[in-house]
Image 1 (tube, one colour):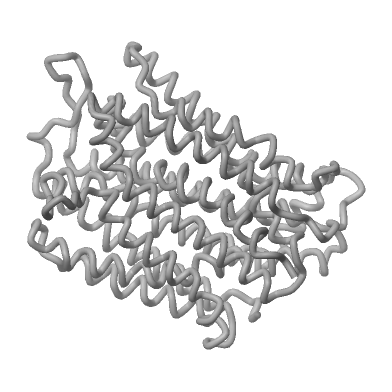
Image 2 (image 1 turned 135 degrees about the horizontal axis):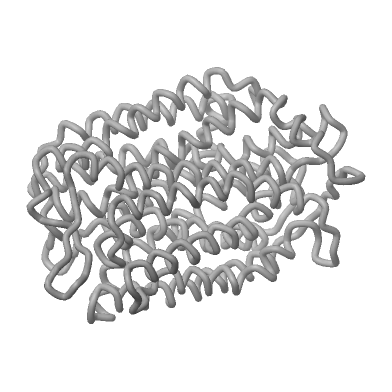
Length: 447
């Protein structure tokens, strides 16, 4: 039986990756790259799409490599221990805005973004794979997975809630504010990642393949549960990706800026914080809900239906500041579903890894969990790229201001652009939820 200290240690890994770096990359990067860094909508969209093609190759290779590591620290933990500092450092550098020409800025953005994706893969693929070797008890796997999600959402809450106040405290230009945010949160992410590697234990020994072989990749694409779960994983991250990537634009243009309620600042990060708290609560409830429903599959299906219903409802909320509390209520209700299915997803990857080991005779835990990380980055970043692309297609454009900076042209924010923003927070995720429901119905493992 694992100690509470180890479960908290495991939670710290996703508090760093999911609650800090990925949360900021999901919600702030689209707006940062266009409105602060100065890239065009097309440049920002291309940047994130190129990075995703990069991940399609690196994530499975990282998973395959991690499965074969043998060291005094174990198979997967060394990547957290020795990858922690590069992880935080590169994240901090990515939020800097160097004084370069536009071509220089493009090169800087592409280089640092690709490096960030590489180090994220190096840390997060082994971190996810840890779940497969810390315990062989199904209930304890669910508990570890629940701790992971609670850690991610709790730190996500802290990150998003602190964001506007850190900006206000730091002051200065937006470029300076984002620079300091990168340094502060990058340091936190490095410390938490290191702590996760030091506090966790690997109790099970993977059944290793004797040598590298293309057979494991062939076995993977023949693994029917993996195919369904990969599709489901991509959908869950598309669902969240659209909402987080468009939230900044929604507040900037649809809500015409931050909403002040006394001393309380509701900006786009604070708005999404209500969802983070809900996900944290329902992530903790997820194991109990799964037992009530009788299986992970049924619990996941119910959660996906909740996401569908309340995403559609959001579209019909009036696009005005007086509707903010209705918007918040619907975000909370939608997040109930997200909070329940998020821990289930990683527990289901462990089930698929066990299925593959039983069927093929060797462990491919790292490779299978790498597909979860790949789905996360693929869904989140492509949705972010599509948000920028669709805004450009609906009429939003860039101009050069008097200071020579590339900024969004206010005159290009027409009703059609506002409608596109609103739909990308509501109807687009709803359509993804429908696909998610179809895939979970077909998922063959009934644990």
